[in-house]
Amino acid sequence: MTVITRFAPSPTGYLHIGSARTALFNLLYARHHGGKFLLRIEDTDRARSTQEAVETIFNSLKWLGIDWDEEPVFQFSRAERHAQVAHTLLEKGLAYKCYCTPEELEQMREHARENGLPPRYNGLWRDKDPTMAPEGVKPTIRLKAPRTGETSIDDQVQGRVTIRNEELDDMVLLRADGTPTYMLSVVVDDHDMNISHIIRGDDHLTNAFRQYHIYAAMEWEVPIFAHIPLIHGADGAKLSKRHGALAADAYKDMGFLPQALCNYLLRLGWGHGDEEIISRMQAIEWFDLDGVGKSPSRLDMAKLTHLNAHYMKEMPAADLLEALLPFFAAPLSEKASERVRRGLDGLKVRAKNLLELRDSALFYTQERPLSLNEGAQKILNDMPSPTLLKDLHDLFAALPEWSQAPLEAASKTFSETAGLKLGQIAQPLRACLTGSNISPGVFEVMEILGKDESLLRLSDFIP
Image (cartoon, rainbow, N blue to C red; front, side, top):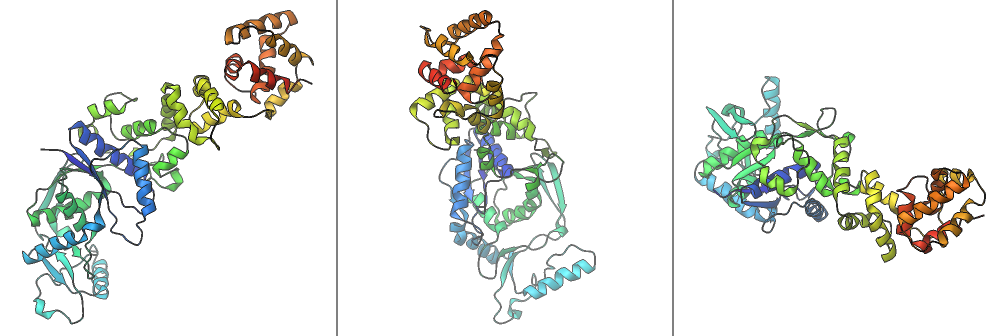
């Protein structure tokens, strides 16, 4: 069997972080088994579906490195095919026309509630003579679902799940205006796209039983189901806005790397031994459904942040610079960009995300004279000697070689001669060169800035 999975979002807004994990699981399962991963945009809700949302979904998936095979399928464009299947079931006697008005349906639901029963359609028109149809009422088409016995699904995550058929009603396939319902469209599309495995959130588990009966009525092969538990907040409640960002692209804006986010989402409900850091290649090699747990996972921002910091530290400077550049307010000059690139190894060890990394790198990009933060200003106010900056400027200007080792050696000799600690020299230097009291090693900073820029920044603060 050729494995074919699919991800089928509705383009009514952003790509939910839980949906991003579902897409990732589908991709990895298909790649692991040498199959295909397809994308379907379920845009049948015309009032809420937007092209902007479609582009947001595409862009979020691409940013995460979740690449699909073949052209995306747009569900609305296949409405005629969906309706055709409904009429086929009608012709086979496995569906029927229902002429109930909205008022009658509400009365049925109310009667069921009064008798302690689930509010559902009671099958009024299931066996009625069609000649009794009222004039001027457009019918819906309903599936004739089995009323007795049980339906079982061998779910690859949940195990064998069984439901009594009497718990299901005769669902609508075609509305009175002739448009197909979600339940029908999903089944027809999955069949026509040759989907072998449906991997989705367990909030769709009850839908699987309804959809199973459409497959059975059409005598189509039923795909293999795998319903994965949802992601919950840190408090164990269903993930909501109060738990933080829900959109995948919000994590991009917050400065997370896509590799780190995918690694985190992968480990959120799936495991491979004690492995925590898992590359995409390893994920494809190891991923299978038997590693998916049955319990909901909890979103832990601290773990994601820690993982992101790890990926930033391990990323080559050129790749990290490419990820970082969009976070600057304006394009960097070639000189500033090169300074940032050279400084990344010293900067990234202190940063947990790209926003923090950008902020710490700003001093490499700024024009003179630098503004001082409160800590830097205090350092310069408390210097041990009013001529210290002038003396250091003259010392460094005379150096024949401009690199960390000679800069540090000259500073140590100067501090010993002046009876000062090295820190009493390094801190004022840091304040002048970066505008801050915190930075990578000051001699590393001086080497990256270069002799001319370092001396000019130093001279800006000489009284």
